[in-house]
Image (cartoon, rainbow, N blue to C red; front, side, top):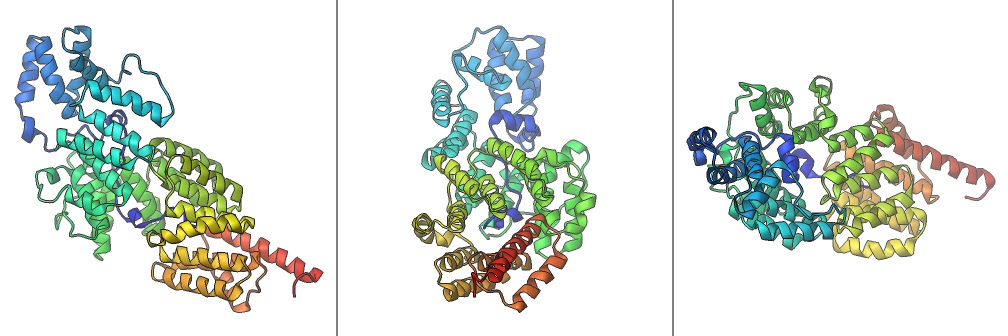
Length: 495
């Protein structure tokens, strides 16, 4: 079974929020390089507005404040709405800045209805890039990739230096696995890389695409204020990870500690993974506020065996990232290690109705069907998985193939495939290899295949060192199935 761990875990992945949620997160508050575009002219014009407020000047400044995410936008928007003697698009823009639902709009949880309403907004405000980003997000959440990409490209064309639009498009490319396209967004655009948020995204894109990093050779970890530390946190995290991969552990640890002082939610998500899987020695001193990230809170709940907490945070994570398959993969994985296979299948069906099923979630459903004994249904889905096996980790595909063979009574073929899965997992890490091995032993017991003593000794060795909850639960499952097999032997049902 797969829990959603991929190579993306190694990098700081930007969140793709609605414009309103991104504003609330604080990540749009820092002008970064935007003074290059608007400079002090905005401040001078805003002072003129204060001295002699007019609707015409308010409308002009509101557009700049909106695109530049300036806090003065709220004051300008309120002035426009108090004296609505301007064109309707400006009134709608003022409502957007303040967060007022457009007149006549009704709340609807269905993506199709939300898309229809937002398309009306886009027609009224075709040059509002934030509306296009939010429309692209809804298309992505409903599994409509081409229109999502078109909407995001329009947004970036309207606001080619805007942090929110660029990070949204970058995140979408990550979502569809087009890391090269994410890299191309930043190539030859040094002006964009002056923004620490965009430089962090560009570094993650380069890492995922296995291209040269745009990160500088050295980076100061000092920040002049908590606000600046927050806005540099993703850049520091990305730099720390790069130094870790370059073998510069000392620099990496110092940089990561600096990133965790005033972290963004993305940094918290990544830091939870780093302190769990890469640098557990830093776990206590990290002192992360996991409430900032539903994803981090879900993974931490899993580590601690807090399944109720896990289910709670998974639901919040799904709501925050309705376009993502990853929370469904984690959910199906958790249900599988508790052998609640009907729930695994329900999770798959729910994700499928939203167009979110990829090879990993498909794999978990195949495993659930095999373990339930429904080999016919499992076989149908498995043929789909074979067609997408290139997108799966090799050890995953081999292990599921081995499980299918064991369930079908072809024991020798099943064990051989599991051995191949272990060999592939060995090339990744000892933790992954142990996970595959334990699933092999569990499958052997489940399908009444004898387990040699040397294999049980390795199980005991893993048991002695087991600290993480998923491994402990797999060991409990092995003990339970071993006991069942022993009873059958005693009763004479097995040879």
